Image (cartoon, rainbow, N blue to C red; front, side):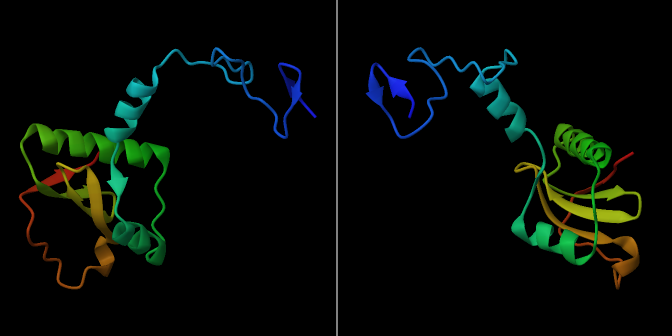
Length: 124
């Protein structure tokens, strides 16, 4: 059993008392900067995740980057709810929250009518 200051402990310590962890390599980024970067990324609502799964829509890292860029462009123009078109897929995105509300292949859209949006962005 590992020891800390001569006392046996039922766990393996991951660092010393100064918070140093020899097993974790630091990237130099603070928690706050990493957290801020994650907040700036597009998120998916549970409804959107369900639709992606049902409709067999898979997104690559490159496609996620394109969606993030499209959302940033819409945000710069003051959009609130946007239709983001990428390849043959339509995404409805709440821009202030950076959250995809739903997603669908254009071929599955019955009427091809999208309401309650204030902008359209082509993710290229």
